[in-house]
Image 1 (cartoon, helix red, strand yellow):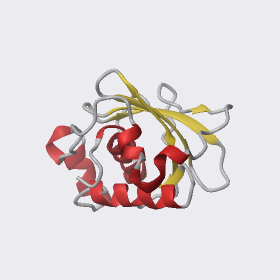
Image 2 (cartoon, rainbow, N blue to C red):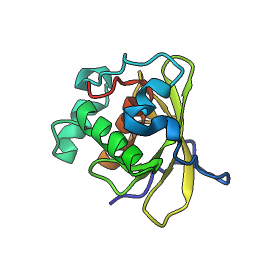
Image 3 (cartoon, one colour):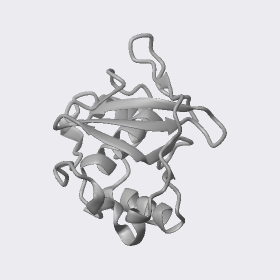
Length: 158
């Protein structure tokens, strides 16, 4: 799998803090109701990100992970009392407990490029489809962007 998005102007910052631990408030699907910001608006469609169609053809894919898939990953991780999920079709691990809304469409998060890798601070603009200030260069980066946005602003199982 590809390494995280690295471009001079958009390089993720190595996360030196302690990634968020699992919280008992998230048990039995409680993570979704725990978020304090406005949610339920994120419903990704290919036309919403201008860069998608050309890249999807190049990557040989029709779409990104669905809300139902991501919801199932979060709910399963919560049942197992872990704040980390593997982003679909990647080696990235997203610490969903670190997700924070920024404004009305931004998100910050902590992720790792693999199970033993260091953690990075990431950010996304869910409306514009930007990851760390730029367009995703790989399918893996697009999946990370979509997953972070779904966890932040999506409705559980939608």
